[in-house]
Image (cartoon, rainbow, N blue to C red; front, side, top):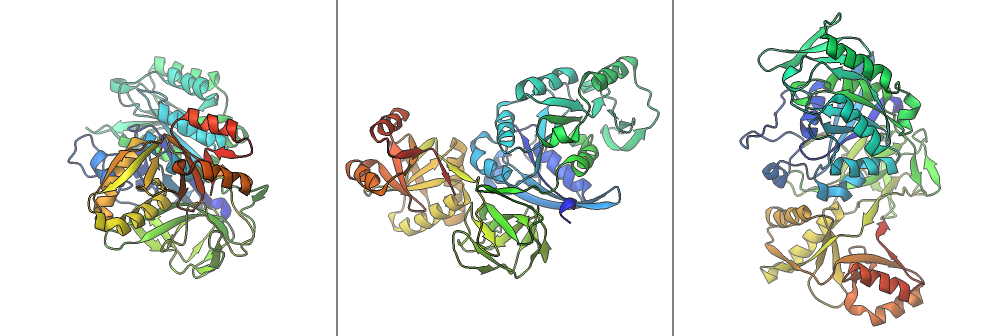
Length: 511
């Protein structure tokens, strides 16, 4: 069944239409029956994949949701596992980890804006991990830039070959439909809403100027090449309007036909094949409080190999002793169902009480360790001050929980003082304060910290002991108990590196 799985993410800049596309993909796959449209007006209800309070208030995806749906394509039932990544720039760490769990990605670009900074950052992460990309140029029914200009921008800015698979018959107010190069049909807008409702012209009458454009797009760019796409050298480009259903069917079809099935995953020097008999997987995300009625915690496991069966015993690398997985979960946003079996490429949720951590490998024999899920040095550090000193214990638990999820990193100074939280961007601090209050009933404030960044210390024990003696005021422990140098500035890091050549001051920590 491995070849019938497609595990993918959608990457984009905020507001490029990712959440709308997610919803329309689920609608096509029958996972939902009503599209709760995300409109500009604040009264409209939020889309199904954005569920946390702060997401609902701000209209951005903060957590990485997982949604599974099935669709029959050319006589074969394909299982699609869609991982919804946060589009906001602050959430790069959670997004990076999510992209370790996918085999391909859809890059959504706003036709009016082209490639924006966050899109580029996320693309670079995909390139780093050799994740192949299918591109959707969205919102072609609104005024935007020319198709050729957008194709050339993708090619130039991302150093990718582009292969258009369809072409808009007009854009904005002149939009008359989409020509699919593969079938030669034009999908047409219908009714007052100008949506795509299934009408296609097989012998399409296209105005001459658009027909010339379409021909130029077909002959002026490389033909689609499956190997080049899967190697990350070429991106097939689709045009569409997720809001009006244009291009959605073609995207699902492209993922089914072109996107790779589950791929081998790195474990040190080895690559673990999905064909391996032993059940293996890794935790790429932990999410607390997914159900407001139960203070639960779910670890998201990307299955790498083997056929998982409910009740199976797996050993987490961080624990060293087996746990029985009695209630594995398949997801649709907050809706869940118990999974009796799972195959490579599937994402299953494992309820737990803090035993599973991001970066843990789960396996039957406990003899491998998947690599490539690092922590990154935070760019913003703040002290946490409690408004009610009697809630110290609750604060410690909350900070441990939220650092386990990857929302923040927490550092406990060696010499007294308040806990320090580290984040990649400002919005994570807002999420922290909001969740402390809503989920843990802890009121806290954040204050300036004297430190600017953190570095994990590694080296011979005697050299570390010596460094500790002279720098206690600048040392802390992370939640794993590992020693961290808290630097007042980047210069401070450089100075200590020069002064202590035997020690490594690392900006990342492999989990």
